[in-house]
Length: 180
Image 1: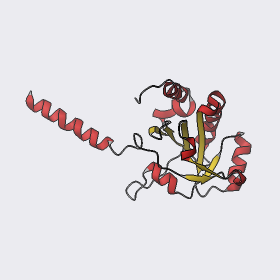
Image 2: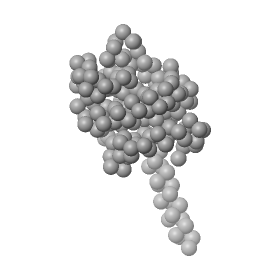
Image 3: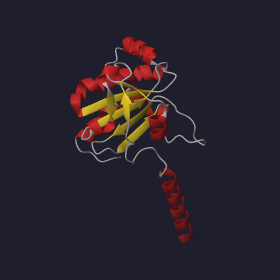
Image 4: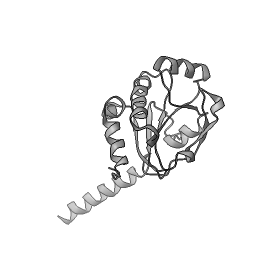
C-alpha cells in the first residue's frame, strides 16, 4: 500500500511540475500597443485597465474562428460595458488594410491592436521548442492583472469561443468567484 501511495504522490508531483508551465496563473505581461484601426486613438496600455476584467484575443483577420469569435466578443462588450475590456491583437502579416476590411466585414467595434510579435510571444511563451502561435487564443485577466484563464481554439474549448461559457466565466469573476 505504501508503494502505491508513493507512486501516486510522484505522479501528482510530476503533474504539478508540468502544470507550472501553463499560460495562466501568472501576472499578465505588460504592453502598450497601437490601435491599428485608428492610430489617432494612440496606444492601449494594459496598466490602464487595472481594476477591470480584460479579455485579450490574439487573432488573425483571415481566421474563420476569429471571425465567429468577434461576434461573441461584441456580445460581451454590449452586456458588460466598461466592467470588461475587450482587446484584440493582430501580428504581421496583418496590416491596417486587412484590419479595416475585417472590421467592416464583422462590424467589430472593439479595439484591434497591432503587435510586431513581442506581446504575443510573451503571452504564449513561444520558444524555439514551442514555436507555434495558434489563433484565436483568449487570455482572461482579472482586475489585479493576473491571467486567470487562457483558451486556445479547440473542440474542448468550443463553448468559450462559440457558446455561452465565456459569459458564465465572466459572471463568476464579477461575482468574486475564485479561479477554477
